[in-house]
Image (cartoon, rainbow, N blue to C red; front, side, top):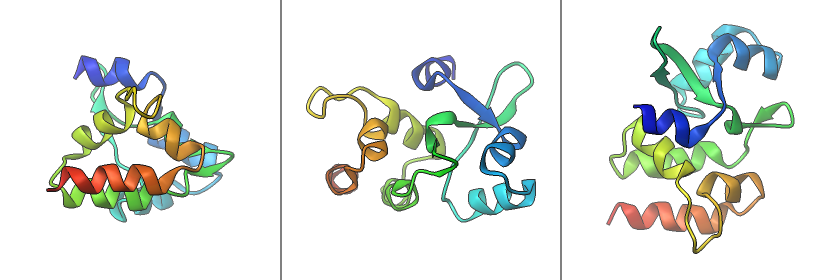
Length: 117
């Protein structure tokens, strides 16, 4: 678990997400239920957190939900999906999450779909 913490870098607790998005905590739970975002439990207190890079300009990265859906359909766990999104890929360059944040969803979804085969 320590690797994922270091791989992602900056994390937000669910109340932090609510504050950042200016929404109620129940709406954050709805985002999790709808799989628009995923979380893992980190730290000594095992607090549910999401990568800060899932948010951009006051909202959830637009192409994240569909990409998570593809990864989860490929039988990735929430933790495995986060690891995949934040692992450096020299062929991009950068990480799949960086590519999503810069609007390159088609390429990333194609790569994610290939994982299911």
